[in-house]
Length: 389
Image (cartoon, rainbow, N blue to C red; front, side, top):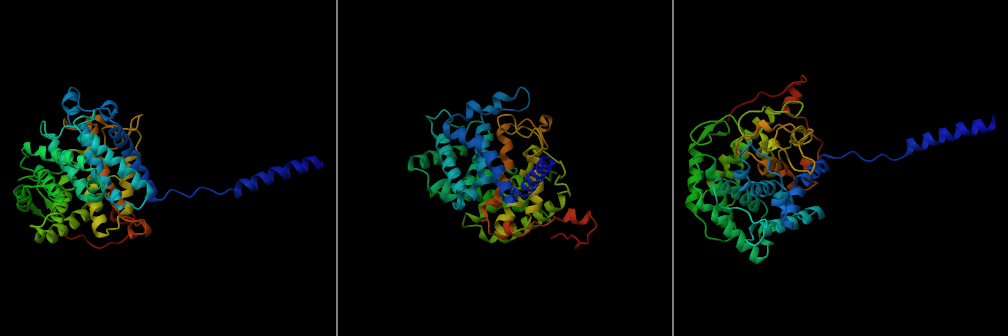
């Protein structure tokens, strides 16, 4: 009997010890965002820095279109990824940010070196203008880490690469902003730049403004997310980095705040949103403008953006077995991709990460997460009426 008693007492002791064992702290929103950043950035930056991006990155696209997209998909991946993570790189306060900033500089060196196996295409065809625009936007968002800290020879090859995109005529639509952003970056770099390209893009988009925070994509309105993918984020970055058009910035920011508010109402209680229009496979990049307004205007939308990221980046099939993004919105859905979509295109989703440029102590991160408007309304809470501007 005493042996049985000791046996059961020992079991009870084990149970108490298990209960007392410390549990790991739950992942914070910021830790989740940083984990997603690493998951997106590692395959692109590590391979490009090592000169193995063209060898190792798959080129998923419409059947029969691989050879065409292979000419531009790698620059797409670099420019779009860096456009999203640049504000975090620019902080330079966290060891991980400094590590990735160095990796990004190594990637830029490899991408712009004509002797590199990963020398990228900056002028052949039309698509390189788009991604020179995104790369230029990254430079505007991280001028110290992605420009000033480059070695002088790499600065020269980068200038040459961006300037080469001038050979491409932009379309009469959002593409004007890519050309303008390249020129704004060249101005920031102290190089000769074409003010006419900036002026044309800015004034044309003023004419294409339709009201209530929305611009046309060219002369016509499209039901899609290009106001957030391209138009308004680039318009803000160009105006903030050039001297001749400052008077337009207050109106542009007011419109951006309204569009960001509309975007907040498009996010359903479960983090999904309408799958409307072209380029939907850019996933959570559809909310770049909302993320940018959080970065520049202390818009506290962490809960909404985190929910969107979880819906689009954690869905099974989003990444292949080697960690590369696949075509889709919520998982792998290859038929959602248009003819111009390929693996590199998909990295525009990284632009939702812009608020990582805010320090951990900023209210965006330190304040309790707030539910977004549709979540509150659809559980029966009262709320203020919505109004146009």
